[in-house]
Length: 461
Image (cartoon, rainbow, N blue to C red; front, top):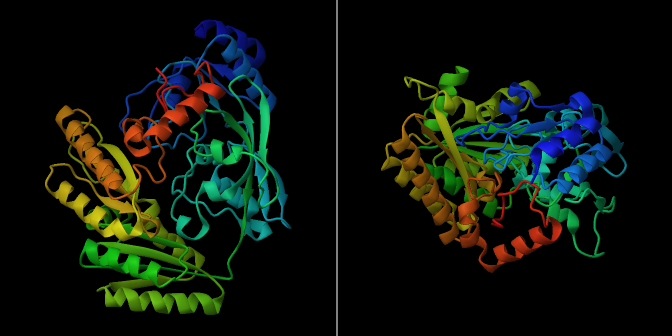
């Protein structure tokens, strides 16, 4: 490996778009959560796919690691350059390339964020539905197989990516998928790349499915006395086949944090947040049916919103939750750090998983609000720690481990949407067994030098 030689070669191609400034290296070596900073040796800012191919080709020649970087919103350390090398920042590749309104598809570069894309689409009457909460880049969302608040209605990135352009570990450029809505032609390389976390190739273009803006939208919050009652309302709503666009859960600690952060006054009890999309008549029926179920489960303090500005204010409760929770532990010498973990279980085991997780938290000394996209069995714990207290970090990681192991025991997965990154790597063998060996074989076949985001998804050394 000769990282310095790779940097010298890249400088001749990129000029001042290859940076080794301390500020750039530090910015790209930080994590949103608790992982220690691990800066790259240089940051490259390509403008197009050909330049990405040149970068990867030169890095392969020098056995130099390469890590892709979108908006930096990963919660599991995906973009940390744990082996050094070159970080490729896609901020200069953030264009909408083509909108096909008749096909309800859009072709974009990887650096564009979901909010920027939907703003661009506003006049077309179409929108991209996957909403992970953070304003993530579309390339990063595909690489981590992200989902979010709308997955219960519109699916995850796996369901919404139709085709990709990818630069492989040797610099070759390939296209996967097509503009057709289905295909039986060969291996599904698009599905292989979505969720590969930049370990098999670097995504340089995406073709995505779009949805039509619904005629009517209604959103609501509803308070419950207990976590069990809220989760029972979720499972009953799903069992009744009510087509929700979103159904989110926040525990009492999350609501208290949001109240303090946003100057709101929601009852400090577990809450569900729901949203329905469709025709006026359809949404009215869905609202009535959900309201009946929620009341039967002890729901109260209903707050409904149909105007866009009112819905936006309502959903700020969920979208601001992470930052509100981070701010909810004052009095430390330095700002609290979060260990953010997510798991996903079958809907039938959701109540058990959440209640047992809450019992673990109650028995610990770590503040850890629970929230999540419970409509598909996915929930999160945000474990707040004093970064100067090693015992707290150890205790929080133990709580996270108990969540992961419980999810597996209940027939679920150690991560529903955050991805593997660094935080869930230790559980991959337990979840996948011999299949993890097959993943390693795929990695070796496609990246024999192990230069693409090494140390993520699989361990080769």
